[in-house]
Length: 103
Image (tube, rainbow, N blue to C red):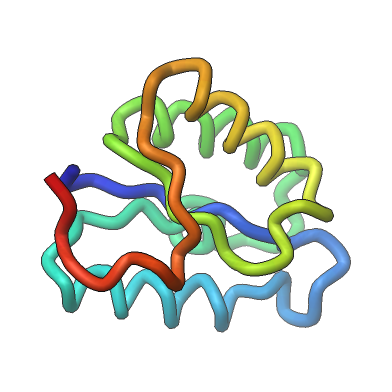
């Protein structure tokens, strides 16, 4: 697994939780992953939610797995991304449990 998508809560979070997404992206990149960070895919906070989700799912389709940030369970978008990952055979992992590049 080389290309990984980060999923987690954004809506109603301070600064859309971008700091947590950027920190996790940096951590995963330091481990050698190619990372898709929704905070980089959709940097404009005024972009409608549905537009963001369409872009995010398109990016997720090209990933090998998904890293779930804490609190993802309360995020409708992250739940959709997780279900999409499960249905398309991707690895679904808690972000904090990723400590090396997985095969």
